[in-house]
Amino acid sequence: MLTTKSVENAKPETGKQRTYFSDDNSDLPGFALVVNAGGKKTWVVSYRIEKKQTQFRLGRYPTMSLKDARAAAAAALDAADHNRDPAKAKAVANANTLQAVWDLWVEMEGKGLRTIEVRKAEFKRLVAPTLGQVPIDQIRRSDLVQLLDSIHSKNGPRQAGLVLGYISTVMTWHEGRSDDFVSPIVQAMSKGRGANKRGRVLSDAELKAFWNASLAWEHPYSLCLRFILLTATRLSEPVGMQWSELEGKDVWTIPAARYKTSWKTGYDIEVPLSRLAQGVLERVRKGIGGNSRWVFTTTGDKPIAAYSKFKRMIDEAMGIPPRPAKGEEDPYKHLRWTTHDLRRTARTLMARIGVPDSHAERALGHVIGGVEGNYNKHDYRKEKRAAFEALAKEVARIVS
Image (cartoon, rainbow, N blue to C red; front, side, top):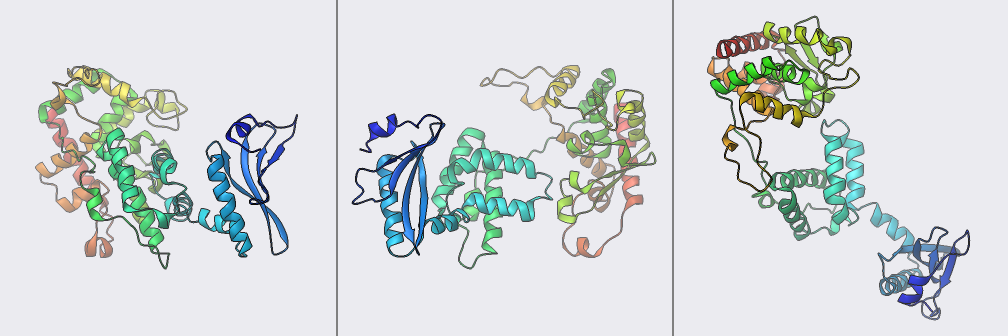
């Protein structure tokens, strides 16, 4: 008898699997529970179609209950009676799940994205457990809203907005390859799920305090922060920097694979180094980084890490109090800044001292769209060098 209790108590034979057939073979011939040598239990049903005997896996116990397994077996046998192979139907459905479409998109389109590993990890953690095995054409707008609301509640609006973007990209891509699929995502779904855009720029007094703090604590991380300010780059770019990326002493070429916007263009990004930025690298050469392929390193065999710990030390040297315990109000929230705020500060300083926007945007490596970006292929090396020298001169004026 296949009952809930007998299924719970079912055990394999010593060293090999055992099959428990249904007591109700008149209605469900071939329906059985297979218990492998390790004790895992799987519902199966056997049927014959086109003179070929097939054993079809229905699901695992206890994920699939006895009642649901009986219903699935009945549906599979009915399909086989009408000459429709349920195993083939399941294979077609599995090939069209959100997970399958995601994997195909990653393989065909996602490999060149700088953030692809982050996207894959977040899809696996936040999306796959809920919608990964659902056929993409059966995912309703309400299913996505429910998922996004849950992420919004647990991880915040920024994370929900990022996940919406990941799913939207894949669904739009699939829509362009399908005759029938229409993406259920609409613009209104992004409302309230923004990326919490920041506008923080360090004042001259804060910039001076930061610079003095980094000078007082001569460390690969503090040198890296000064270099970020002087090159208007993102943290990940100098962190992964190797000495081989330098052309002489005054040009740093960031490989396209490591630059945020280069996946759109495929081009490496050239950063002419001001004399002040070159001076930072000279200080690095005198330390452990001078004996490593990595520029900014504390061990010699890998780039710097533990950014949050080092950032707290910089904040402390600047006189910014530690963050309060989680859940408590932060009276010094207005003083806190992030590494990316240095890049925004550098761009703001360029505007303040009169660097033309077209030069400053290219110095920051931004993709120029429209007709301008399509037809103007000038490398702007001379103009970028002038922009970075002007930035360095302004930073030197402020901190001294």
